[in-house]
Length: 176
Ligand code: 5GP
Ligand code: MG
Image (cartoon, rainbow, N blue to C red; front, side, top):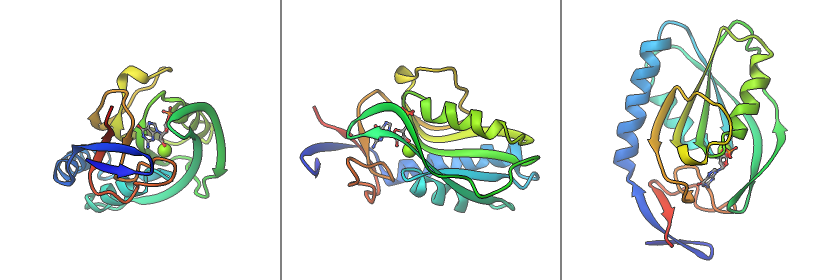
């Protein structure tokens, strides 16, 4: 058990288990896009750890850029998206992979996907470290998924609880 702010969390996935999944995703991405010079679009803040590991697991030419869109306050998805930082790269004709820490309601991914599609990428895929299938509220196809999880609240490996816990090497779940 660990404590982040006022809540207790227990370990769900270890650093090693995460590394194995990241390497699996990297080889799936290589099979699809290894010769296509893909552009990764990582969603700040949460995806920074996963994106850094995923990029370093790839051994072919690729680029990364960042966007920031927030829908969470405290422990519940607000459903409202605020764009804080826009994309600075031209994605027209590029093979794009969105990199996200976790897909919960799916609203963040759904809206970001719609926005990026307007800029006519050659292809658009989604990679996420964790996915809560039972929480999904909109039609969304996820191409690369590290772990499927329950609807409980997670921290660590980039995921925060009110800003804290992102630096934890493992993924933790809220202890009831
Ligand atoms: P969605 O738009 O899919 O509801 O939410 C996506 C965003 O909500 C994620 O990028 C992440 O920042 C946040 N989020 C969703 N579930 C969790 C969770 O269990 N823990 C944390 N720390 N953030 C979450
Ligand atoms: Mg996020």
